[in-house]
Length: 167
Image 1 (cartoon, rainbow, N blue to C red):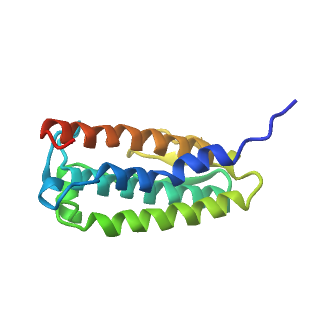
Image 2: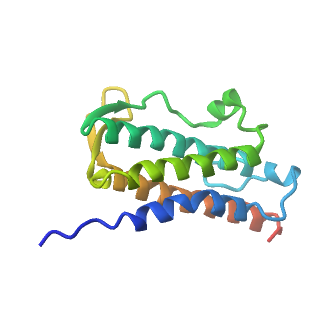
């Protein structure tokens, strides 16, 4: 017997990401956002913007999968290293606005997913490296991957805070 996927679980976890980011910044001031200690060597501010960006890209993948199941999605242009962070301005940009944007985006995308009975099973064929073989990923896997990604970087924020004795 095929079990119907539970739309609530992956969507609920994904929609919680903005609030979890906001909570990780509790009691930090503007200068604290410059603290480093993350696995990538990014500041807390850059880490927040990286998480928002990752979910913006993931949202586009999800829309592509819902609109055209099995379509190709090329995201070889994304290279979030330190140079990228500077060029985009993540070292200076407002984190509050970024989190509000992510919150609205997560709610919007989750509404689109919830409106499609088979949305979690729909796929997109990803190209994340020039010349690399494309690989399929379901919407459910994209959502779960972003939750795991957030967990990793929220741990980086905790570590940066701990290193500076701010917790």
